[in-house]
Length: 152
Image 1 (cartoon, one colour):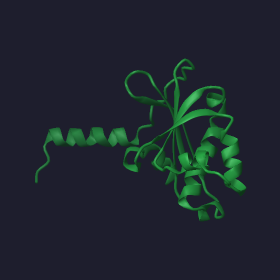
Image 2: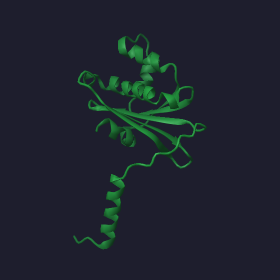
Image 3: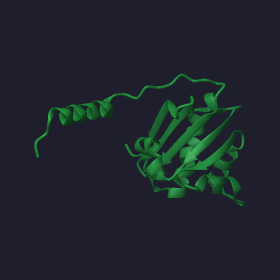
Image 4: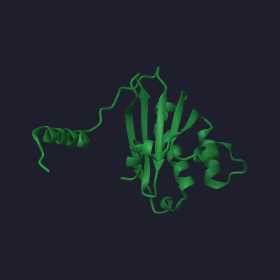
């Protein structure tokens, strides 16, 4: 198959978009925040964003590599840890404001409503009580930015 000039130009444009750094938006404290998180055995990822009327625009990205002990956590524990870590990481933006946590795992809803938690799960639930947020479930295939930071 022969590649024409139009196809080559389109290919070069796609390559340039894939390697460029994302443009971060300025924080507007009048708008609500969205915190999107994801976790894997490798690491944790989060994106803090706001909707300026044309979809969520990233304000900040964060990622963290898991140590060997954390890598042994269950998927539920990893997803909960990602939210707790991200909320603490972005505390200056989130504390005292209502925000939405977007996650691809229902673990956070469970953590916030479970009775008789013990150990680290209890500490995590307690740490999240000082924040005012809603939880939105979004399947992993729609949660690609945070997922990319969690698996790098």
